[in-house]
Length: 449
Image (cartoon, rainbow, N blue to C red; front, side, top):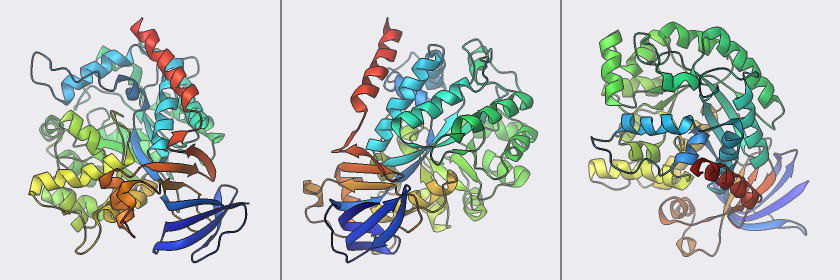
């Protein structure tokens, strides 16, 4: 039994002082406010629950910053994708595992305690399956085990190059499966994750351009009790192509022809009409927002203000891993709306904290999207904990929800992180950072050579 004592902690009912918790088998065994520390308790000043990173492509951490030079023509998502395709061809299983393990350690340092890995890199560079079809999924699971982060593995079904079952390009060969091959892969993913503490497996039809309606339904049926994630309406061109092929926009198509519910997470959902926004909110599905990546790619602006007013659920993800920071993802959701409306505290309730509003939304939505069960400082919930450095100037005058505002908007740094009751980050640094960084650096230097 481990005892922790916090001067201030965010409980489900709100901030409380002098909170003592005990941990057993990775979960909260007791949570008591107004308590007195006992000898042997580890003491911290400010604590709140760890967040879920609901959308990551871990291997893309290795190409962060490589697509920031202007090309001869206008740059957008599609030109960035060409850089990504070239990078994919350089990766073998060892490099993928090294990059993922380091990225996962950075996520823990940033306040994420679970990652949803949208895993679409399956085969050898020429598209030939590995002898073990789940080879690369096993490498992602190994990276999770090495770093200690929780994992919801989302193997991706990818079959076509565009709407209308257009043939894929040679550059997409590493991603492709038919339904039978995907079933074999999914079985392998379940075995890969079975040994992890709290591992979850869902499914991810990549997008409506890469999977037909029948394939989307078939893939979703393969995980009847697991989460289902899909890219939707990220790009204007995607929306236009979908309308031309089906007569419906992507979100409308998913709502009307597929039928989505609380198991589903629509990644990005950037380009929604007012009607789609209301219907997506009413469906109970989660909008998976990745505003740092969406800004980097020039995707567009998700209608956060209207969506939240309609009761919509959301979570945050680091997607391309151009920058791994829970605070930056949360901050960007609000700042983008400030630029759009030329106003401040756009997403906050009247008289309420912006940081608390978006933190609570991301905590609940991320847990739903990754199939995590109860979260937060409550008896029986997994002990995923983040603490802030007490002496930072940004927390000097902060009280209550202002502590979250200080972290999200004013740069108060993370001190410690526990995941399932195991302390993995101390003084802001992952316990195995040096070794994981050395392995990552060696993998990328080999590409330079």
